[in-house]
Length: 245
Ligand SMILES: Nc1ncnc2c1ncn2[C@@H]1O[C@H](COP(=O)(O)OP(=O)(O)O)[C@@H](O)[C@H]1O
Ligand SMILES: [Mg+2]
Image (cartoon, rainbow, N blue to C red; front, side, top):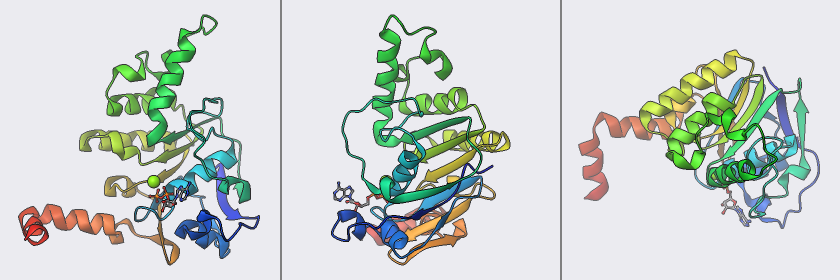
């Protein structure tokens, strides 16, 4: 299922803006259209290539709170999101029933906001019930993140995740992969920015690599992330030896 089928730049961007120097944005300025019509789209690329900028702009253009959360979340702590979203056009499919935008940096604020809303007398039933019942602050980052996916993501949704691996142990990352699969089978769409070769390996994921050369679809095994991890795990001693000599 795809709720957002593609995205392109429809309004000119000031070439003096810092945005115009970000590889992902430069590609859009050259007229590249980003296909999103796979159940799972994965953006990979070096730090600074614009993964976060891009998926945040897609999320905001779709109507999510730039700080992360659901379409109903409206908490705001720091206005740090870019104006890129105003210049994008999303080609949309069917309307999504559910959705969530997760920024690793603002998950903490999202959890605080949820606790805060539940402390208000008017809030009944408690919002936290749809997140597994335990304050997201009373769990580890990884536990609360997985609970969010397991309890709150209900399917038929558009889920936009920025580096979801940040919180997760390898075992939990595999659990996340299985959860993603369940949700995809329940008509969901995922747009993910990640450095994790495990997440890239989701069958049928479209892996889009952002670089100075533009946006390129690749096999996950070709990515720097996969090759570098593989080389390391094949012979850690050897790699450490060359690295630290
Ligand atoms: N407010 C800003 N002003 C100037 N440069 C910025 C601003 N926000 C982000 N950048 C730059 O934009 C680039 C892309 O950032 P980001 O999208 O976070 O990359 P990625 O997620 O791929 O690591 C980075 O080089 C970053 O320094
Ligand atoms: Mg990022």
